Length: 298
Image 1 (tube, one colour):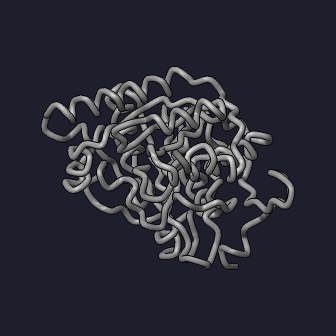
Image 2 (cartoon, helix red, strand yellow):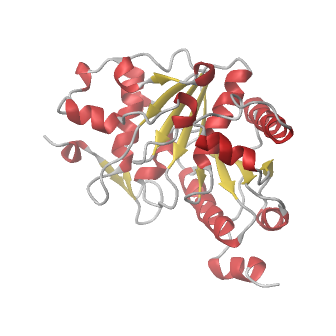
Image 3 (tube, one colour):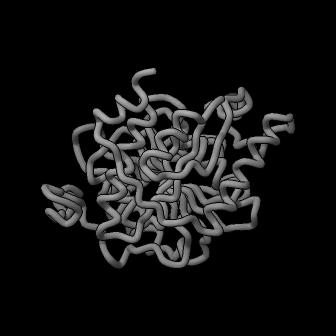
């Protein structure tokens, strides 16, 4: 039987016309605080996720980061290299997960962060939700979630299918990475709508947004004021973050300079906010035309 034959779906559970991958109830993540990081493609979700994981580790938390992108580059600044994906490893054993050991698909990164790259099916050939579900199931079967304080899902951007909304079925809070520009905020509005749809049947709620690589935050703040959302972080547009990616390191491994110290402090502040708990936000996403009117003209 192929993996595709094994994917049960639920129709209509998450909204009118919805077709969703059904996650096994036994694969529910318990005992850890779970966050899903979303945002427009290329906005810096992996940079945010990895530095946030490092910040939680710096706070003494036991952290697991799960990359949910076929590029499998979510955790390379934590481990210093690209990790093999769960889906590729499963293919090697003809989808017999009982043949796998934890070290086959989990790598330890900076600060003891446990790193997993779920990966994804080739374009047009399968469902990302299956990959997320199998990854969580493997982690539970090997008892790798029992001693974990924080789980961070770093999710592929610019995808609105139910499969890549699968991490929302596990998450307590969704965090959106944006920039102070129209395209990023437009994508954020779409993600807010998706999370709101999921929150009707799952525990996930929105935590807020992080303005990334942005000198100013005026447009993000203007949007948040209109829809009832919160900006809970701001990462400035500094070269230190670009250099850390080139060196395959998190900011917490880089040599100190003024910008790096400032950015580390902001990631630690953000991790503290998330750990202590955010209000369960329920913003009202805007219609496309209304966003154009709000942000598209002077």
